[in-house]
Every structure is written in C-alpha cells, then in structure tokens.
Length: 320
Image 1 (cartoon, rainbow, N blue to C red):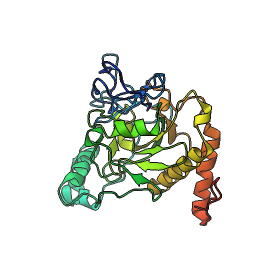
Image 2 (image 1 turned 45 degrees about the vertical axis):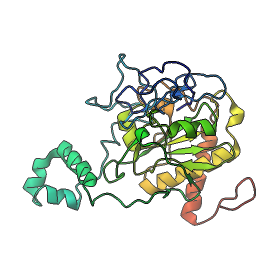
Image 3 (image 1 turned 135 degrees about the vertical axis):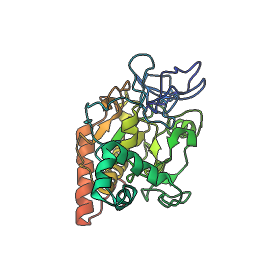
Image 4 (image 1 turned 120 degrees about the vertical axis):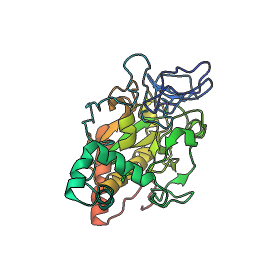
C-alpha cells in the first residue's frame, strides 16, 4: 500500500478489501502510482510529501487499488486469478485435508464426508472456527513476532479469522507506505480508512504489529490474497532508494523468514511478492528501487540461521 492523506473526495473505487468500495474524504490511502488508497490497500499515486495513500481494505478482502466499474474483483463470486506470485491456491484454496472436526461435522463416515464436497467442506471448516469456544486463544497486546510493538488497528480495517485453521497462509506481500511511519499508524487506526497491513517496518528498523496474523487485514486489494497473506508495510516512498535502509531490510527479512517458517511455505518469489504482483493490482509498490535480490538473500540467510540455531548480528553490533 501507499499512504497519502486525502485532500478532497476519495475515489470510491479504491477498495483495499478487494470486494467493496471504501474510503471517504480526508482518509489516507496507499496506492496507485505512489498513492495510498483510503482503505489501506495501496493505491500508489505519487502524492505530496507527508501524504499516505492506501487502497481500501475494509474487512473484506482485497487491498491494493481495485477500481469499481472496470472489472474490479469484488472478492465475491469471482474465480481466483493466477498471476505473478499467484496461482489458484491459498486463501480459499490450498487448504489441508479434512480435520477430525470436519469428519464429525460430516457424520464421521466416509459416505458423509464424500457428500460434503470440497466447497462445502471449506465453508463448514471456516464456520466451525467462528463458533463460540472454537476460536484460538488471544490476549490484547499479544504479538506474533517478539520484536514487535503492538499498536492495534481499527476494527474496520481487518476481519476476525482463525488462520491458518480457516484460511491457509502462503504469501507475504511487501508494501511501501508512500508516507511517514506516523501517518501509516494514524490511518490504520482510523475505522473509516478500511485498509491496513499486519505490520509496519520503520526506516530505523523498528517493528510495529497492528493486526494479528490470525486475522485478515485489508491490504492487498484482492479478497483471495487478503485471506492467504500477511501484509508488511515499509516506511518511505517508492521513488527514494535511500528510504530503504539496511536496518529496514534486515528487520523485514527476519519477520518474513519467521512467517515462512511458522506457516511452512517456501521463501521464494512466488510466495514473497510485492503489492504490484497481486492479481489485478493497481498499485506499484514496492517499486523498482526495492532490492529484491538483497532482500531475498537476507530472508534465506535468516532461515538458515534459524535452522542451525545461530544468531544474526545486526548492523548496530547487537546479536538477535
């Protein structure tokens, strides 16, 4: 996503959720050509300094700049598209086989399970995890990465879920805020923004988590990709190479490596993608100045250290 504080009517086509128009006047959004759409997706239009633009990401799925009236994927009833970093798995696809609970739901017999069918099985599995008493335990202030500071996003910018039990996580999506860290936090805490990412990485390497990985953030502008991914915002502007600091790269790479390890998907460019690579994306972040070769090298290096139990020494000389 990109962030830009809206000055005038926000484009209703900018829907970070990926299934509905979102945003309102005065909201920040990430997105097209460097702008942020109001709902946290990323409509990366190049905006004035200090403005952040996001694509609407209001609780449905989708995030980065979806345009209404021009074939936008509303996230409802459309077939998942394959694209860069895509494929037809993940989100609603690529799930695990029937669980013990699903077998019980289906009557505990082979005949009952066969009658469920793939689509109904997915629906039953998702509804099971939404029933009282079945949700995963969570406490206010809990974070998924121990280095992260918790600052909660407004509830209008994400959707309650129980991933990966109801939706498989198999993607990390890299965003750029197109604005300052403070402006990104501000819009993600605005319930009218209708878009937000799970994490923000500051230029000095500080890490903030605003939405649990359990839950679905409205950041990608594509419903399926919201369901299957973790979104990471990076403070800065896509046209400023100097904004992408080594501290930022290292913090983000360590975070991404941890996500890959937690959910068991490969650390490659099919599964770690930019917002621009989301099918039907209208955003351009992280842009040509993001050093993918360096970033992926750091991610893989961190995974190797995790496997061998060694620790990384940061640029400030501290071991983490």
